[in-house]
Length: 324
Figure 1 (cartoon, rainbow, N blue to C red):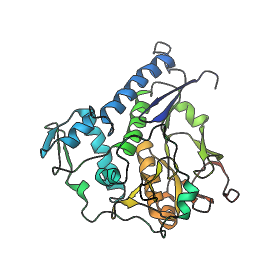
Figure 2 (cartoon, one colour):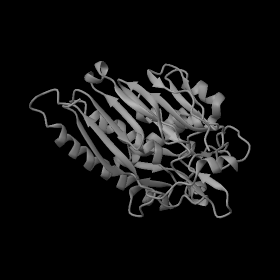
Figure 3 (cartoon, rainbow, N blue to C red):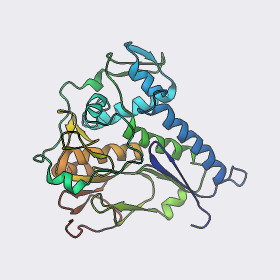
Figure 4 (cartoon, rainbow, N blue to C red):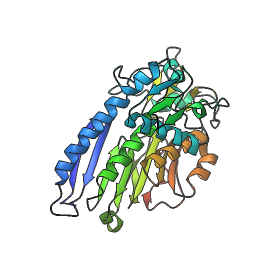
């Protein structure tokens, strides 16, 4: 649409994109003014919640040896989102796996680094199996006490708000753009869509195959959220020659090899879509079909086949030529 602002920048180690239509009221701020405001919000959100910045509020929380720690409303909201994702996924999307991630080598930002080759990693990966929740369920012992402005957790339990944080951020910005005819907010692949205009003219969201990096079609989204999780984005070679990535099996603390290399999910918002996409990838093909059946999505098998599940509007190819 010619009257729609297309605004991009980088934050949280990811590309950020806003599409903003005209305001509903002529007296309201312009899309560009709104975009500048939301950019400032996203940059602040990312700086305060980064696991890789020593001066962030999240890092301060993770260093703090006390059982109860004072936390800002933003940090409490981010931890709420991580705990919501853990509850929604029965513990599969676990925000307390920081120690395991750091042991595997994900103790610094991978922004700007070249991912290891996923096809090579798949050839050397162990037998495929679905992830399982950690029986210890440490996330259940984390409490957000909004009345006292505290986060309560056992000392030594560190939290990661990475994936859920991007979904939360996209949802917050989308709500703040509700005075516009239509809008889409993309925070590193976690996308929130809204506005009355999108009901009549849905956004066409490109679906990228994690093995080829090519688009295999589009999904029409008129409201809510869509998110993609894939092994291709953050994958690296460990010192022992094995490959690791950032999606872990909570029961073992090791990278999951479930038979899927990616999953795209639709949801009521970006946070829910992000959670469902991770659940689908962690559970493998059979579990993913159950997770995505109600709201829809696409899964990507190890052999390169793409499978559309549930009520997906759009045109998505079901398979690609065999990878090299």
